[in-house]
Length: 254
Ligand code: ADP
Ligand code: MG
Image 1 (tube, rainbow, N blue to C red):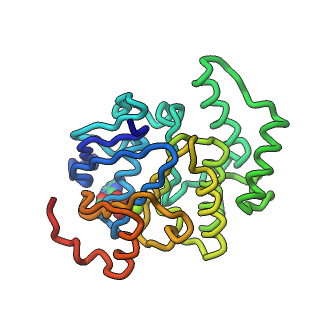
Image 2: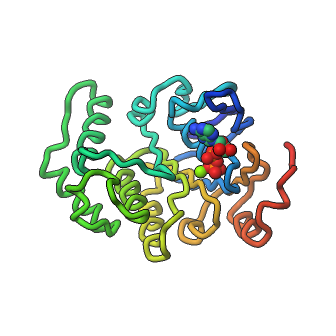
């Protein structure tokens, strides 16, 4: 059974407007799924709902993780089980350094898994952090700065992937991680994702453009329009979208 399973997922905003209108999707370890859709189709809403953002309500259907219904769980509990979301628009947290943020997050997950405090020894944390920062070409100077505070667009996206590399989730959802990256940064970030996908991790790559998929070949591509998956296929579907855009799908009802 797939690790992450969405069953007839419907998601509404706080005012009741339905944005995600019945999504079925299964993502397993060692798999890369791409969700491709135009702006405003509800991709970020879907990713927030998967992660448990309180402003997005599941009105129908459910989310299973490792066979457990996690639809009612908070974002922290989902993270403890191994879900991770890289935000399209990461928020700054003035007062919290990148290092402290990562240590706190890692130790919270370790505590939840062990049922008692089990902090990662500082030398081990430091060694891992520096290795991952170098690998993802994140400037070491960022480690002691407040997270995302005054970071460039590219720095924010790299730090999102740094969080993923440090937290080692089982399923990573990447919401437009490619947007705002130049080609060199895209290559580094995509390479970082690709290295982690394997028997320990699967990924759901959400994107508007097929560009990132030149670097991370998806096993499955899903076209997402108007809050629904309107077509699924293999990597060739991404090429077709690049050539034809989303217009052929507008007005499609499933
Ligand atoms: P995408 O990520 O595909 O561009 P979004 O999920 O961001 O799409 O948005 C889908 C629709 O939901 C848009 O019309 C957007 O304005 C609306 N929407 C999403 N989140 C909110 C929110 N918190 N408040 C109001 N409208 C929202
Ligand atoms: Mg979005």
